[in-house]
Amino acid sequence: MWIYGCVWVSCPRAQLCVLLEQRERDHRNWVDALEACVRTGEPFTLARDPHQCAFGRWRDSFQTPDLIVAGFLKRIDRSHGEVHALADKALLLSSKGRVDDALGLLEDARHGVLSEVMVLLTELRSVLRGSLRELAVVLEVGDRTFALAVDSVVGVEVLPRDKFRPLSELPSLGPVTLASCVAERERTHDLVLVLSGNGLLED
Image (spheres, rainbow, N blue to C red):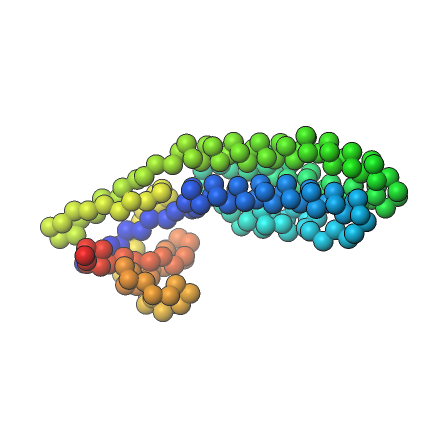
């Protein structure tokens, strides 16, 4: 018996909350490091391009069908770019001997644009935590019925048998005990795991 239906999770919400908390700390530390360089004259080596920091790289690759999450991220994008623009402004002032002006710029940012990013990230985490709920996908295998607990169901589709391929096509997975093969989705051509109903029922 095979389970042909698949559950796609865009990004588990609990993991996303942890990631956002880490990126919040990153940007507080980024501004602290920038201030230290302004004070000492040492080179600033952290990312100035908002697309090159850890949050920016993640953000450029992350997509979500959740309109609330997408809305928060669009608002964060604007302020996030302004935070990274501080580096060029502050270091230019410092290079002209206007260290006090550069420090004032950073202090204003802590209470302004950086604070806005932090508030939005905190609010987004609150929304995500408030929406965490366990969903059950009920399956029938022979005369037995059971459920799989998932974070969210993004899509359901029938996978044609001629689209099935061996697990060896995804060598990065390592040992997988519940899946017997992979299948190619017709519309997107993504590869997904096909679960074995008998494997799921093993004690």
